[in-house]
Length: 412
Image (cartoon, rainbow, N blue to C red; front, top):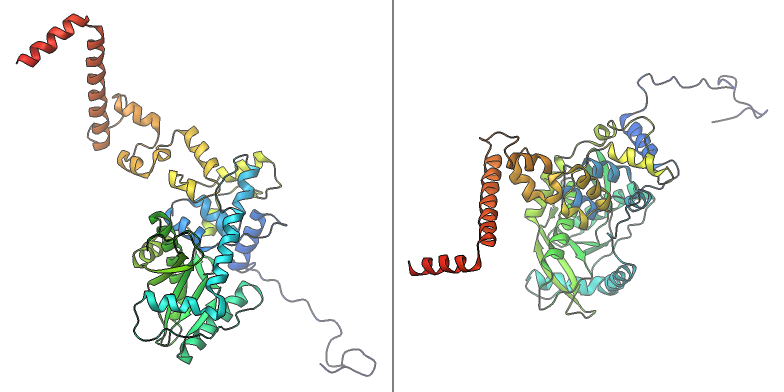
């Protein structure tokens, strides 16, 4: 803009610009949601990132609105659990974290040569393994910038037609109407345009196999990365996301890497279906009373009221996947919720949702006799009463009479 010699604005431009008209519709929905989540989190609290491990746990329990809201708002659940008086031991130790970082650095050394060799060997490709790969720079400002830079690097690597290694790329996936930013250990782009997720773990692979539960957790986590990559591949010509993920672990308690291919098609399908079932964040936030906050600086009473205002779906599996598991378990036990006994038990009980209702149904005080669950409970109660009555009879009989009866039964 040009200025007059006096330093003021030109004559044809007003010295004071009019204020922009107010938006009668209010702020945009996305902006209003971010403001609402920031209020719930606390004005001075830095948002806790939603990673693939949390997403996999959330997909395994899609009925838990409490976890969906807390993760979507970026609440630090570890600090929240401590403020509630129910600290959880869930999480990775500092020693394991440092050991994992050291192992990952070793695997990715020399431009990922060893990583490419393991991928080539595990997939059974013929010929010589690649000697090196292009490693693009993925640095950018903020998660949005890193996500855009990763998408550009993936498109460039696919168009180049060679081997490329993306070290800690940033991917985005919409979860319950809110974006989640994910950071896999690595993604390899092959000359044929296939993208392969690399998951590096610090648990050992002994004699070519690792702990099944840990491998399952890594597969569910990798399935989240595959879903996020597919969104980018859909906009990239010639790209295809492989459903075979390379799992890299230490070999036989050493620091040498070993690779194994894991097919995550089943985990991908389950995760995709479960994430679509999640209630949108704004709908869950509407359940909270005015002024509710998850700021750890609030009193324990206020935090408890805010947390309990959002329904949870506790199950014993939460103990290995959620920082609030101890708090939710205590509340679930206090209510007598049958889900405390496990999803298998609660599924068999059907509409009987409390332990008191189960006991009343077994005693014949409540419940429809035509209900299979009620009928099974009453049959089990009758068998238990019959067994206890028989045991009591045996204890009441004189020892000689019992021996005579047993001998008569043996003769017959």
